Amino acid sequence: MRYLYFYDSANNAAKYPVDSLIDIRYAGSTTLSMFFEGAKGMDSVDTVTLTISASDKHDAVLKALAGVLANGRDSVVTVADDVNSIYCVSDITGLSMTQAS
Image (cartoon, rainbow, N blue to C red; front, top):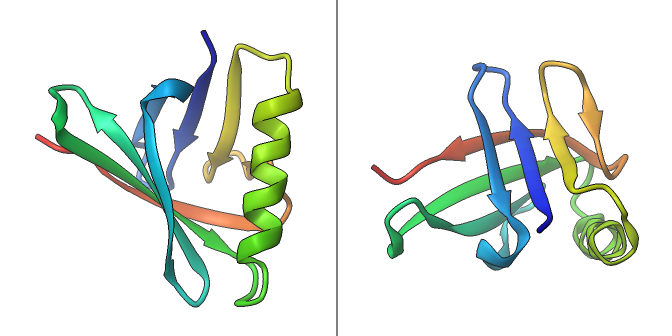
C-alpha cells in the first residue's frame, strides 16, 4: 500500500493511504484542496490544501502529482513538508490541513 505524507508548519503531520483520496479541487487562485476519507470513514473528510506558486500552475501541479503517484516506487510519498521544505512538485510551496474530529 502507498501513502501520501504531509507535514505543515504548525508541526501537524498526516499520512493517508492513496486509496483514501476522494477528490482534488481548485480551491482558489493559488490553492488546490485534496480530500481524504477521515479516520471515521466516509462520514468524515480530512482536507489538505496545497499552496501553489502561481495562478496558472493548477494543471501542471495536478499532472505532476499524478505522475509521481503513477510512477513512484516509494511506499510513502512526501507530497508537502513545510518544516523541511520538501515538496514532491516544485510548484507546491506550502500546505494547511483540517482533520475531521
